[in-house]
Image (tube, rainbow over all chains, first blue to last red; front, side):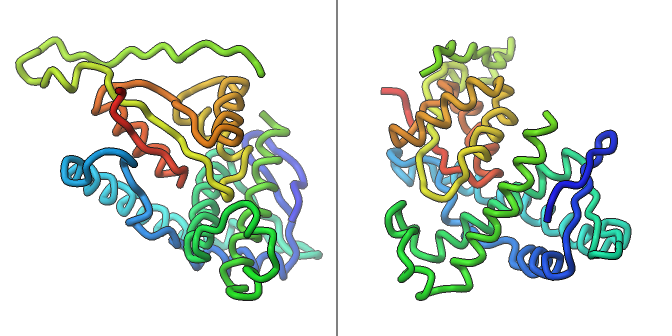
Length: 157
Length: 102
């Protein structure tokens, strides 16, 4: 997948058929981060902050529901992926890219949580990839798509 | 390391003092972002820009502080506003918490 052009406020990416399948399969996994992963405080007494913690989890759950709805709409929108000879052209506005980055980051962080929250050194070990290739690849591929989208945004700031 | 100014924090103080607790009006909570090996550096910078409205240079300064020192204090706020910022940062799946300012 690569940025083809920026037309007004719309970014046009070109991706081949395999990349589209990969992106779709990836996005179908959303959300991955467990709600309990979202902690309001490290040091505070959990009892003291229990209502606020519950509020945070409810807010995140609500946001995810909305993201999931938008995601399904995006994946089912026939206009979103324009068929061309070599694959597809994906049309996204800046705010849609920002939103997609959030979704992809949930997949990246969620995979990392499922992998046991490995540290910097452990992430480099092949052993981790072999133990759980599904989520290792989800983490890596989400990161690749994120880097591409961030580069597109940064180059057109 | 670039020199950046501390954020100017103007809490929304309701004039009706009867309806707000003293605690809610006093900035006393730190909004902290913690390092992890999974959030991309450019993504973290972008989130700081969006959530706090910071220029890129300041957002990068705090991102590098998170990366190099393990954490960065992003703001000192009242309970309600600290909660608001932590909610926003969690929307973007950053590892952020609010801690009482000692």
